Image (spheres, protein in one colour):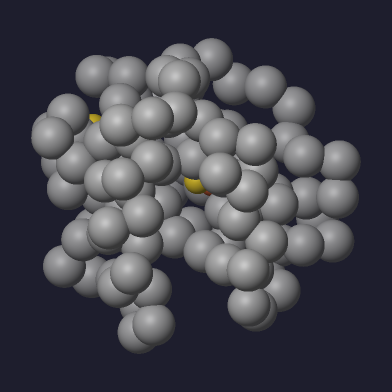
Amino acid sequence: TFVVTENCIKCKYTDCVEVCPVDCFYEGPNFLVIHPDECIDCALCEPECPAEAIFAEDELPEGQEEFIAINAELAEVWPNIAEKKDPLPDAEEWDGKPGKLEHLER
Ligand code: SF4
Ligand code: F3S
């Protein structure tokens, strides 16, 4: 399973959703998640993310482990997204900022 991690928050570029063959991305106000039971581990989305926020579950950067549970939880409640849309307005400004988890909107 692949996991969307912290740097997606407040960026939400959505390039990832276009390449997913099983449409397993789900969208919140300022973050996307991957449904862990639907992802087929194709790895196509990982290089598409301009924010480099997508990782294989077993290759998560240190400190990003909690995003496994966050993806699983929110994929159950957020709506599906399969088409790219504009990034959030301040995406470039927020790209790479540390400590974005506190800004996650549910
Ligand atoms: Fe979709 Fe493949 Fe990414 Fe899983 S690894 S979310 S199946 S594009
Ligand atoms: Fe987020 Fe990257 Fe997709 S910023 S919306 S995981 S392209």
